[in-house]
Every structure is written in structure tokens, then in C-alpha cells.
Length: 116
Image (cartoon, rainbow, N blue to C red; front, side, top):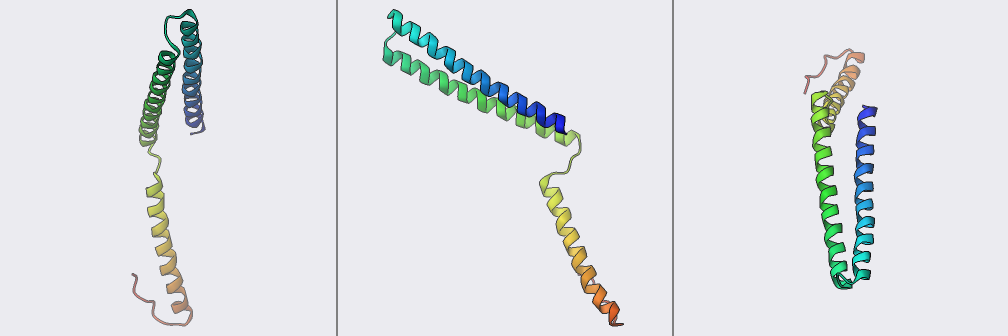
């Protein structure tokens, strides 16, 4: 399980690094185009906004894909979900309560109360 979380962490770091690198490189290219007079500063800013927006969309899509793959891996590994664990805890709490109610009746020599 630790290996899976390491892979996810590294994948997310890589995607963030790629987006950051792309934005830096795009800024350099836009600055060069502005300096050469091939585009205006406003066009350059617009291009940068588009590049950043596409980078964010790509990052979100990448995260969605990683999340889906992690879910698939966890399902295949048959690892209980949080809701499964909460259900088990609730059942255990009910059993402990039933046991606690049952024990005082036995100590007093009384018949045990009916189970809930």
C-alpha cells in the first residue's frame, strides 16, 4: 500500500512540475514574441492566460485519472472503504452495548434481557 501512495505522490508532483515548467517556458516564448514585435503585450497576456487555463484543466484531468486508477487498484485489492469500516464499528458498538447490558443481569442472578 505504501508503494501505491508513493506512486501517486510522485505522479502528482510530476504533473505539477510539468504544468509549472510549461508555464515558465510559455512565458519565455511569449516574452520573445513580444520583444520581436510579432505579437502585442495584450496578445501575449491573453496567450499566457490561455496556457495557464489549459494547464490547470490538464492537471485536473490528470488528477481525475489518477484518482480513478487508485480507486480501481483499491477495489481490486479488496481493501475496505471508510463506510465499510464505519459499518463494522457501528456493529461492534451495538455488540459491546448488548454485552454490557447482559453482564450486569448475569451478575445479579437475573435472566438476561432480550437482545436488541
